Amino acid sequence: MIRSELVQILAQENPGLTTVEVEKIVDLFFREIVDRLSSGGRVELRGFGAFTTRARDARTGRNPRTGEQVPVSAKKVPYFKPGKEMRERLNGK
Picture 1 (cartoon, helix red, strand yellow):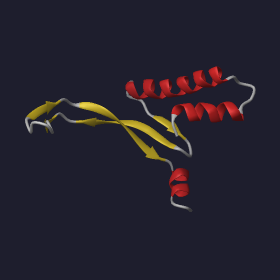
Picture 2 (picture 1 turned 45 degrees about the vertical axis):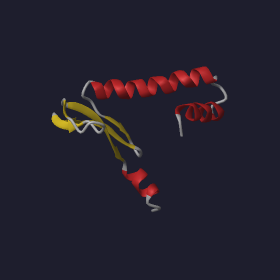
Picture 3 (picture 1 turned 180 degrees about the vertical axis):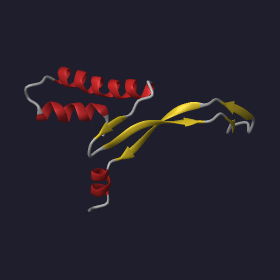
Picture 4 (picture 1 turned 90 degrees about the vertical axis):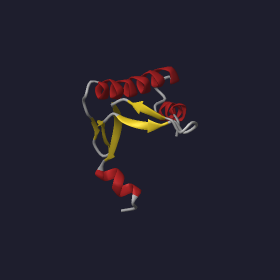
């Protein structure tokens, strides 16, 4: 599913809202998740899962075209841990 499909489904299920209003809600939802993660926080959606960040140390990488070694700086990466309900539904329980 892509973002536009999500907006379309939400607009169909909520006839009192226009597509523009639904787009604003979806944008706000994702923006708040990103803002919370960028400030070092955690986002937990009960029954769905939790978004956090993990730190990656600096390392030496390799340019796949030239084989040359290149430095890769330390960074934070997003991490998602599915909730119990999601894991159960995915595994058919």
